[in-house]
Image (cartoon, rainbow over all chains, first blue to last red; front, top):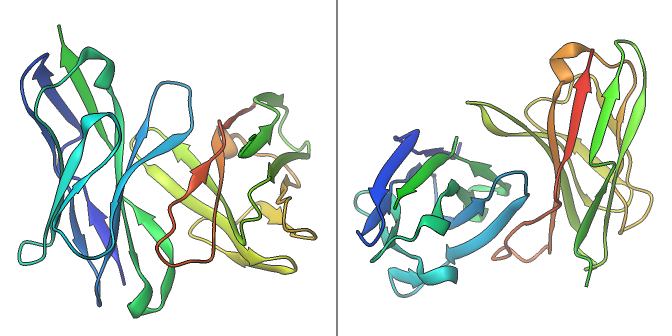
Length: 115
Length: 113
């Protein structure tokens, strides 16, 4: 079975500071990992994904994420936070080699960037 | 390019009423799915489909019905609405390629009184 844990319900950061939103996963095979962002009253939007290759993945709006197989983590990062980054962030995992076509989502982390 | 379109955006029902949430995508995606989003619960999968004529249950299927007669459309039916079905519903689609990401609609906010 596949699962995703986002250990923080909320992350607070000052504008201009670096931000990290944490995600750990559990799969039986090699994971496909995704980050999505949800702005208020909107649907989820794809940010970035790790499939294979370089462990550091760059995505939209200056976000990046680092895949760490030994720690089973895929933390989302940004060097300098903006107030407009305030949103709900979801990590998701798929395990196609484990037979699961369907992504599993974490519960989401609310990012609040203070001016 | 419309992507994933959901209607209606808002709906208020009385307990016991029925309704259908519509979802259409114009990207020729094989996979379509319905989620509900509740505070503190994240996204929970209701039903999904890997192609026309094929549907399957997700994590929370009770009280919901789906069909997939075409590649484009994946309606979600509530046969007898209950207050516990008050939620925000999202439709999402993706290609059958394993590396694909999900494309989401803008959501349908349903209130059952």
